[in-house]
Image (cartoon, rainbow, N blue to C red; front, side, top):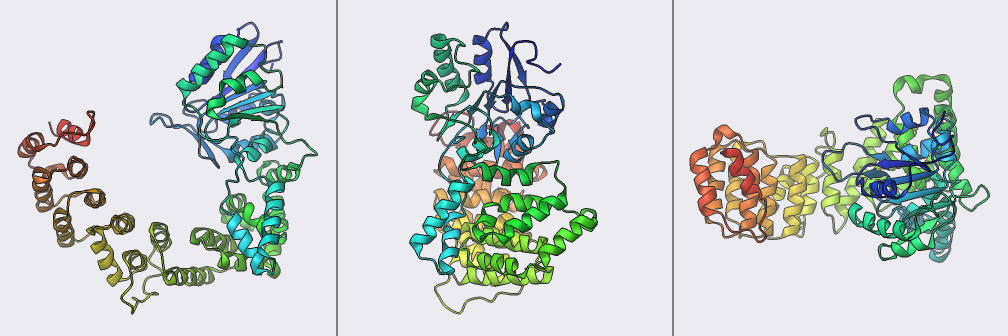
Length: 530
């Protein structure tokens, strides 16, 4: 018999982070009237699906987790591996495979930051406006169409929660930063002492609860009604999330979305890519799937709209995703995708300003070195380290030399760029590593030197000459932060290359006082060596 069928109300909890909130509910809600079920089964990745199969019926749902504002509920505790994706919530909400958990809910409590933030979370707005202006609309008309599109599709965290918990009368959450578990528990304690359980599972917002949490920006809303302004957005969501629908049916819906105004396709990009990325070769060869992909592949008008939109977006990372989508649905071959990426990277290099995101993207795209040799060094003298690092990611020896020079720059922005570059393209030549370490040791103490040392730490140094150089720098630097960074290198280093007794003596004798007492990397290194 499903829980809750014997006259008691069932309080379900998803405790991914702090147990404090649920513990407070347990303390004040009498066992004679309430049963408690935690849906999380530790060590089991499909715990929500397991709860669905167990036919658990919830009257109240309490979710305790950090929220990233878009895709995931997670924990800040290192020992906790459980998390909850919004995609999984959408699947459970839309599919008949999970009727019990959501169908009877009267209240949902979301104890996470920004869970009911009303501001659009999508980065697509500016891209959509630019696309509409290129199509001939005035900026004012483009903004009006964007607002209309967002109003229908609901791009905020609050809208997404309302679509997921569509039949729930009351959803509590936070419009910005939520209180930590113990603080939230204290507020709940105060609320229950004053009100008891008389407002729990009644399906009506509690004015008293909102007053208690007012300093933290708690707010309340309700699920999307069937005839509400976001009902169409929920139906679209379920076309992707409902696991009763075949892959071919979902691809046919993708085709429909791609035929709509391009802004709608951009708003659905995450969902479309999750679907297309999961298409392995056996799935693609299934007759119905192959036919759906063929129908999309023949749609030249939709192809042109998407590629024009991709080429017009200012965010290279989004452009790459759109190019990959075009490849996945048959609009681009691998060679054509390669040409589109090369075209985009040439445009990036032509920009007057690039930075860490562009360097990270270029190195990631050229992980297999297939783009090496496509980009020449500039002829002007005003080129900077960031542009050089992008070229270095694309196989330029001149760019690599400039990027390594940036690592020992007094300009912190240059050091940050070099850090990111070296994450993708570490130094493998021992002589070059020594030269870089010597240059770092000559830098003035400060944040750039600390960052340069942190970049060196990722190389897991085994060269005894470099390790001795760093030990000498540790003894003479006046900076506690520099000593911490050096300890971070030494603790990762090849232990056989360390002169352990002498090193421990140097670490203890020359250590600088910490600005705030407490555990430090130097303490950890000394403990490890001893």
